[in-house]
Image (cartoon, rainbow, N blue to C red; front, side, top):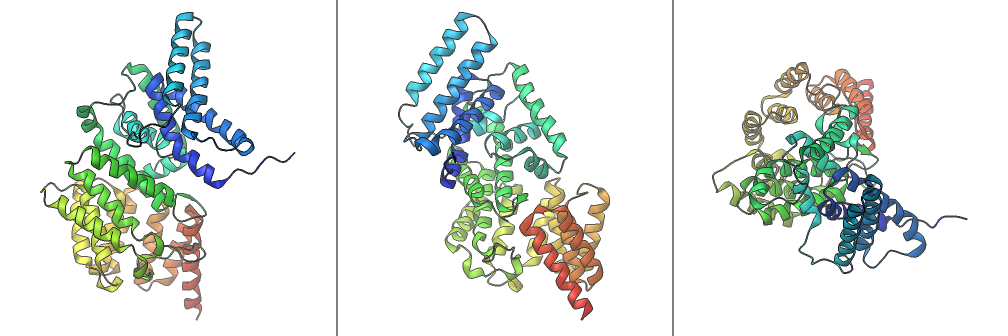
Length: 418
């Protein structure tokens, strides 16, 4: 007998609900690792039952109840004491009652989980990695890609993070306002990385994951509402809005990558650009400038240029210079190399790229080779540019990026042959 097809819309629903359900279960049982397993089992149960029986009217409540049952089973298997069994059963009864109707729309378990995962017992990098798994739904491979480390290293880091939380004895609970402020830096970094994965997916056939980018923006708005006086929270939201405004022009009819110089700027979302610029202007007037605000300012310069040739590259290069001094991020240095090349010529940019490559921090990154290929092409060194594009194509795991890089190499070869 053929299994009923699983509706793609339901897959999106499950992906959206997963962090909300995990937040509810963790808040109730204070055990992240066991809660994560229980939620995964509930999601599997949904994929098996919903195609046959239909999606429940209260899908979130259904998932929480199933996950709660799994947690009750886990507690019982971990302890033979009747008192603990009764406590778990009581918890289950309370959680079922709490989810018999939908929560108020202003209660966001995903936002709660976001702050919970940035646990005080963890280093910032471990908290960010754990949160990307729980809130962003990213795979270990995708998180490793974001951190520029091997997948095995990231898997160990996430596993140690869970063990550290359990051993710390510090409750895995929603933080108070003061603790929220202390965890804000890690929270913003998580949202930044989730958005980046949505902007350019590290793997797969599509250049963008618009659902992931939109979720990052939604959560950034919620954080901004929760902590309205933080300039960097506003700066990050402005950066996301200004960058996401170009989404429709970044791909062609077949999903092919269209680089910034060749994008149809009439397809950019001017309403979003106006919102982002206004938010950035208000934030910069506060006089406290951080990395996210600087990146938003760079995005605004791009967005406000009527044509690519009208871009204020000297201003962008200057902003990247400030950003590079403020943050120890090799991708910032790589982007600065492009801006410098546009101001001083490709040779100046290539010198910066070579220095960055010598440092080794972007070893194996396809973006380093892709930028080198672009700058070599601008310098008229076609053969070297072809080699760099091919090296980048061999290293990327995104099909749209690979196709673009191979096309660039093939085009240059044709010109060389002609």
